[in-house]
Image 1 (cartoon, rainbow over the protein chains, first blue to last red):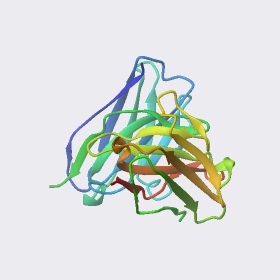
Image 2 (cartoon, rainbow over the protein chains, first blue to last red):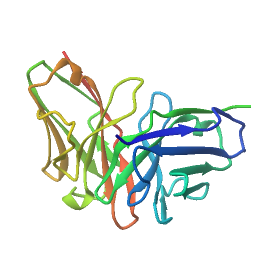
Image 3 (spheres, rainbow over the protein chains, first blue to last red):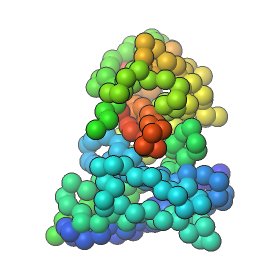
Image 4 (cartoon, chains in turn yellow, orange):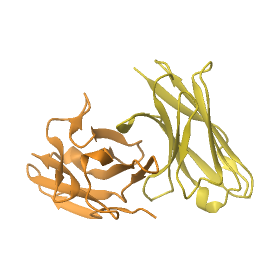
Length: 117
Length: 111
């Protein structure tokens, strides 16, 4: 059974860079799309972007200038960096597996990141 | 800015049938948008129910079905159970930009 687990700081200061890692276990990171999604408290889901295991990426246009997703196949991990954060970036951040025609058959439990000084 | 629109809230009686819809600001939703549907309960991660319009995951209860209806993606729950009370999100793929876009969610109340 594949499992995903997000990790990283729960508190980030405004204007700094948010960094999260998703560790995939119970299966290989190869041959799939790996996504980041976020959900501000009490609000809906927002797709942030994905990376294919080979390294190609696609990002939400509204976040594209601040987002970077990378993959480390040797560690079965992929990572998210979001720069110049503000309070509006406070959210639960999820990682999820995707395919060419679907997204999110497996999800991490989510991690709350708060942007505050 | 592409917008995906869902009903903000719906109410259904136990044992009843309800259809949730998902519309795109760009026009009619087709199978090329690979409509996906998710269920989310408070404090939990979303759970995938339907992918690529009408395909079910191995864990998806038989009472959930996906389709295209009147230019929208649709999720139908037949024989609703109390445990189906949750927020439901649709997700569409925009191939030109290679982006996924979530709908705003539908809060389903079973009453």
